[in-house]
Image 1 (tube, rainbow, N blue to C red):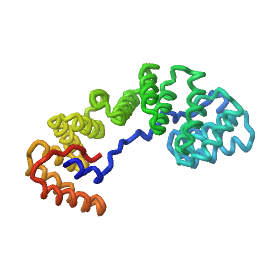
Image 2: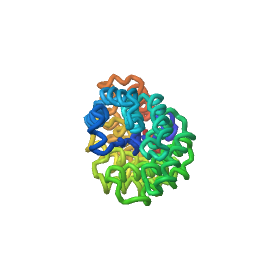
Image 3: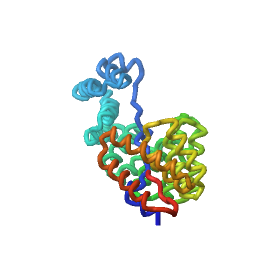
Length: 307
């Protein structure tokens, strides 16, 4: 069958959103800041994305055992997260929570640190602590959904995402777009393609230039047998990003399904040229093998696009 042609070419994967909603810093009143210039400067460095400098300032506050020590630990945790020093971030957030067990941002940031360290049970526990204290904090529900997704608990992930969407109306358009996108990815995992299409369509209503949403919706349409819609979505991807190489391969596969062999050849060749320019030898050779197999086939349809 033709689907065997591409089954082992690129395994289908989904792009889980790497940005979790938890990166907020703890500030204090102007009166408190006035007596802690290090803390004030640390907050300023955080806002300027000068994370190593922020760490130095918060460390001074901690070493001085200043009354703002809990907030210093919490904000240093955030700075370490931004530098991907997850072990140090987790330790600082735990220190902050020992001093103030109601620090919402510390729980959120600890949850992210544990998520990155693949301590998923601890990550879920941190988000539950947020929900106990603030039941409408959509960030905790969304992050919880990402953890469930990683664990393969797709129904629970969907429940958490829906709670995030329903818990509050104050999240930004960008955050809402991410939630719908991750719902779509989850439905793809469940092979519920109609719901995946609906969620990616929500994303595109909110952001008509989201190439990944077009790409994933194209996959869902293809799996549903709607080749015309799949072709159109892969074309949209290419219009938005002419260097999105696998979109050419998928569009070529769909063109083959629709009987447009010349168009299929054209798309495969573009993909080959781009992989060569990228010095991506592995993908180049796999595409070359795909083309060689294609030459041997005189009938049949393609079933699995490259993700």
